[in-house]
Image (cartoon, rainbow, N blue to C red; front, side, top):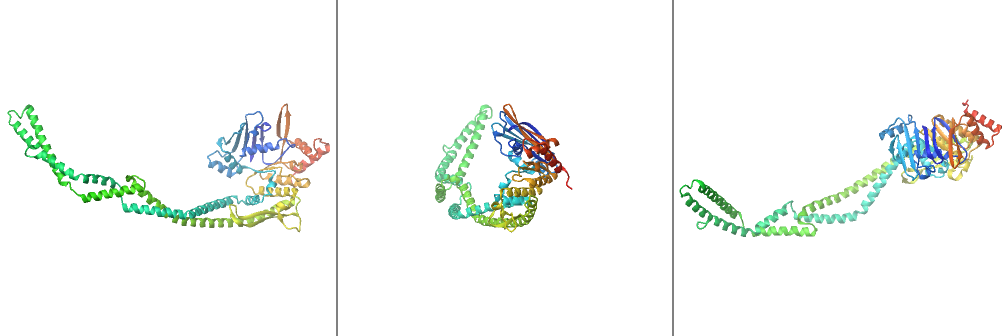
Length: 557
């Protein structure tokens, strides 16, 4: 529950700290005193939109915080645990600067406004003074029924299934419409792949062909020159080997040739002879392996011509043909699989459709059962609110087309007088009747809520007299099981509260400030008397107020 609300420099409040307890708290004050300020500050802590107008005139920023006891709110504790935030208590803080910028914290850790909203939904429910206006929009009836029956999570799951179904249908339609275009592309790619298959160029083959073509094209020249070089090495007359042998023989015949410089020279000549012999042998081997093969040369050059022609056709370099071939085969495989994708997607659409219909059918059955219970409970509350002859029904009828909310159209029907058929609420209820019907629905919804903190903002508009006293009793009863705060102008409602918060406005020089305080018994009697009789408080009005307070605070027999 909400245990503390701290406000600093907000609207016409300079500084305020309110400690709140369980039970029913009435919030009263003259029109314009600032009751909306209290709810506005709380709303900002719960993630409502802020603007620079929130900041008190002349101040740099407004600082707001709301502290909650979450011992009996496991959903809120789980929310905090999931985000690794301390879960022993819950402190929401919001700061809005004079230039309209806003920051938020949860338990001292920076948070987004969306986080405040998400967590706030676990902490407190606010029933606004315009709730009865929402009843005039039939789309809210289904949401109210789902909230009452605890079907919100199932409804959200159905909406997610619907979105998946719709998305799959759109993809299927797009894929089907693209079928002819895809087929044309597939045929072109198949032709290109077949052409490259026929070429059959292997990885590295082009480089091998270029080297072989170079060798074959120069084979005759290679054979001629290697033979000439071999002759230069081995010729008997003037050959290098013959001349080296002669030089070696002449020098080795000299006295002392095995010593000094001559010995070194002879060694070098001997090494030279060996090198020339090996060179001649290598030249003979090369000459013997060099073949003149004009047919092979013609085939290689034709093969290279085919490669270059295909490369020009596809606007790629010859060395990129293998990569292109692999790419085109992959594209063909993907397009070939699109037929399987189309079939798989069709099956997926059918699967989503059946899942949606199954979930929607189950939700319809649950809504129909809950509609009967809601109708009876609201009708019981209407009897307390002086509309005992009215008949309230919740009508659940099939929709013509599927929607994220399901296959149901929910409508609240009312028959204000016996013998009259029940008709849509939006067409038959008067202003006063609508206020009481709205209050009855909200009381029933609140009694089934798992959130113990409730705020009612002037939901008793249009109600007076004995009915107002009954409204106060209903709100007090709700407060006995949790925490109820109600902004009211009716003394009959305020008298029923366990505690009474009074709000008044003070003008101080050039500044207007709002003051809020919890009233003691004497203060409550004075405020109830003001609400009963206006500015002048007579002894009779005070006595009436005292009797009203004491009567409402006595335990029921």
